[in-house]
Each structure stands twice: as C-alpha cells, then as structure tokens.
Length: 249
Image 1 (tube, rainbow, N blue to C red):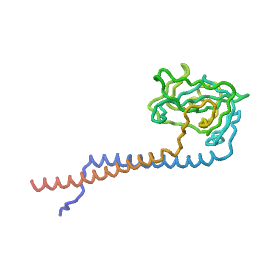
Image 2: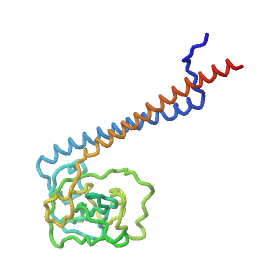
Image 3: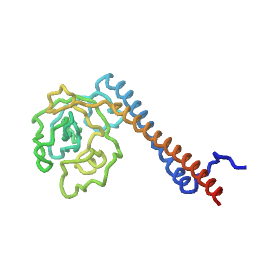
Image 4: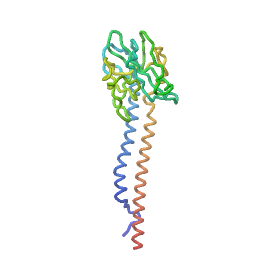
C-alpha cells in the first residue's frame, strides 16, 4: 500500500539540514544570550552609577573596584601614548574616539580617559588636532572595562616599531604590554559636562543593542524554520516524483 504523503527527502537535503539547522539555532540562541548579557550589564551599570563616587587611587586597582562606578581623578594628560579608536560613528558621521592617558599625581600609574568623539578630518593620513589641555586636570565619568576579546578582521600591527596612533579597538592587554608604565584596568568615559578637554560625548547605554540582538535572533529562527519547510517540501515532492515514475514504468 502506498501513502501519498510519505516523506522521502534524500541524503543530500538531509545532510544539509543536519549541518545547517543546529548552526541556525545556535546563532539564534547566541544572539538571545548576548541580549541578556547586555541587560544584566546595564542593570549593574545603573545600580553602580547612582552610588557613591569613587576616587581613583594612585595604585593599580582591581577592575571590580572601579567598573561601572562614577569615578573622579586628578592628574596630567599625556599625549605620548594617546590612542584614536577608529570607525566610531556620531550622528551618522565617521570619526575617532580619543583615549588619553592621565598621569596620577605622585605616581607612575596612568588612567585612560575617553575624551569623546572627533570627526575623521581631511583623511586618515592626517588625524585631527587632539591636543589635551595642559596642567592639572580633574576628571569625572563612568569607569568601563573594554572587551577582552573584541571581534577583529585580523591581527593588529605590532607596536615594536613605534607607537601606533590609530587602533581599531582599544585592547587593554595590548596597551599595557606596549607602554612603559602601569595602567588602571578601566577606561573612564568623560562626563559630557566636564570641562577637562572633552569632545562630543553622547555615550550609548549598554543595553542599546538589545533590540538588535533580538532582531538577529528572530532572523536566525526564521531561517531555521524556512530550512525545515524547504526540507519537508523537497521530501514530499521527491516522493510524488518517485510515484509518477513507478506508474510510467
């Protein structure tokens, strides 16, 4: 007895589904996990940011002592190991974020301060003027820890041939290994109202990308559903084709 809707997909479609379906589902799950991580980080950020202000000490502190707290520090800007973080967008325009080391008084320790966004300028071969103010500065802002393993398209250039001003991402481990002084494990996002040599500072919330991650997760789930639908369609169509071939023979 022959059943008209018997499923017979063939080995090639089955192999494709076996490989692609777990991948699609994993990517959807990963995007949902990233959204949840950002939500949890933002909750921690909000709780610490409204707490007591923390003074940065003249010793290298642990990241958890400073991360997400509103911090204050006094010191002197130095441009020798300043960094321009590339491909940062502000109001639809591409530019750099300027990260400048601040030498803490009576100490060799530096604190990295993200002074904000500047436009690209004439071209990438001619960086914009970014000299910080001279003299003792008092800075305030939120302390953040950059991602330890950022996504990059390739390995960054080695720094043994001289300082590289433009970086694709602020890798703290790479920075610490390249400079001749101890560095606090955080980067301070300079307050928008601070007069301490800042540029455009419209800092985004950590959870700003949650909707994007959920949108990507939905797309991966849709691709998984479409894959299964095509697989079933191909299997049933193959069965009908086999039945027609049997009737002709």
